[in-house]
Length: 171
Image (cartoon, rainbow, N blue to C red; front, side, top):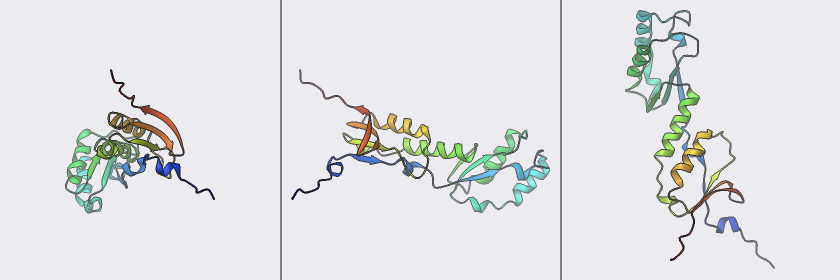
């Protein structure tokens, strides 16, 4: 009787799922509700509304400051919001929540520990439950290429080769 052998499991290929680099959540901080008629920033009213706001809800959160309406917002308004958020948040971005999530993902990739990937065959998981920003694939390739033996995209049973280190030929 023939024994089934899982060649993928025995191949020593490491699968890297980029979902692990995505932030759990980015909380939006929309300036629109703080504007007069959701269009005009009145400094005195804006400051009073910020002072009365419950900032504790952002404790250790990743926060994106943006304005969802087509209003002209002075730069100091973003600075004022940032100074209120600073004691509470894990990180802050002046962008849409979607753009902030991409920034955080790229920051996490940049900070990744390369030790487990040195001289290894690595597959960057191609399909998953959560959409991965395209920029993450380029960033992880840039980060891993100097240390891996080979880099592939897809699933261990069906990969697209991206990079393979050439063996040094003895002279």
